[in-house]
Length: 351
Image (cartoon, rainbow, N blue to C red; front, side, top):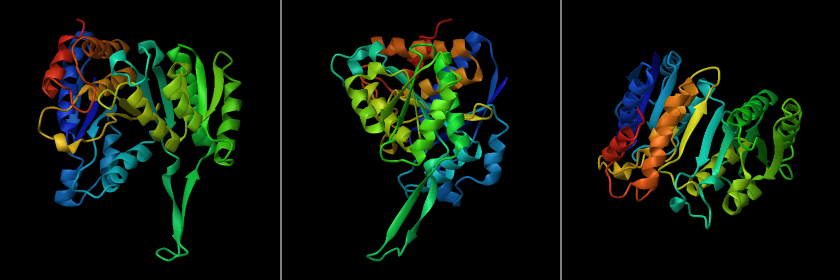
């Protein structure tokens, strides 16, 4: 019995979550596991109505669940940063979800914007440190509002935080068991403090994994190779900001935000899974948003719970309809409604 917290969120988030839960209901019956869901109305509408973002008590309440399924956070009538910091970052930090896991996998070569690239050329994973770096929110203003103003933003990196992320990446590369190559993506030639720590830690931990090949690439070179030779990559490990940037590029390489899913992972605690495309508020209530990213997030959720066969069943169903039926992997799925795509996934699950 799995206890799953569901946060539909804002905009089209509730619409894609419904489709994900529809798939979960079917796949649980096929693979013989039970679950319960509890839905929470955390998001922009509640903030507008009550002024509450996410309380400490509510975050603590999420600890009792096995996992969290998130739709999207982001409301057009709420100033940018309030919900993102107050809900997403607060949850990640409070629940110590120190890994952001982003598979980048091409399901249909026709949706790849790169010339002459096939499905086997785009199949890698980015392991992003999710709790430190520039997103820690540390810094200050001096002489704010004057001609002499100085704004300082601190990239905060600890040996503990860096090492546990790198160690997770090595373990994931071993479990993935494909090219067994882990690439450190950084900027050692300019950011000489933080990335000195990252590189030293990477090299020390690598000694414990002689079966894993290691590599290094500057972040600017990484973006170049994503476009020119994505087949070079297997697993990439990087810091919070660089990971945030390169995974959006990865989403485009794999066909667009309509298919891209991610996990905020605490290997020893409660993890949270979501489509990475955002709330897309202009499509709210129109039943046209692509739910496949949310369905792929559900697949990641199941894998993390240990339901590997169910996770693969869901992913295989997505691959089948992407190859045979769908005309677009953008924000909208052209030719089908949101609910119709959810039905298609359910119909293609293998009994």
